[in-house]
Image 1: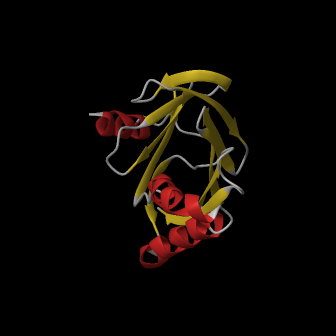
Image 2 (image 1 turned 90 degrees about the horizontal axis):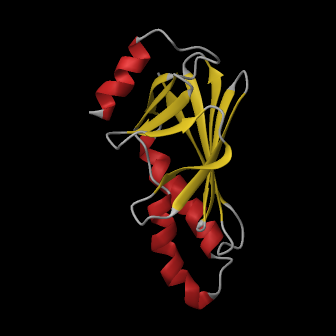
Length: 165
């Protein structure tokens, strides 16, 4: 149902800015899992030996691969949808206030910023901070970078994937 709503927003013509809005498909999908596994392994190797086995599956769960992004801005909100999951929505004016609670009733706060080439959404909770950056490289190329930070991580977990229209 939300997919139809986001699609309707995309077709409404209310889109602007860096032309980031729209539907983007993952490129070089064959190497994507290897890139994410390497990013997880780099962080896990800096952890205490006894914690590694527990941390590895938790971090792998956080390194979700989206085959498709659907990005839209309308009516004072930005929405981002990974594949067929429910779209996330944040007010364009968000500067760190709580904008939703998750399935475990943990409050999620967020910030939205936009430049001529990128949209950055920072999402934070008691578990840590996730910075999502969608940067337009060219008319048909989008670079998506994620940075996960937490007190439980020795270094941030970061990865970048490339998408095309």
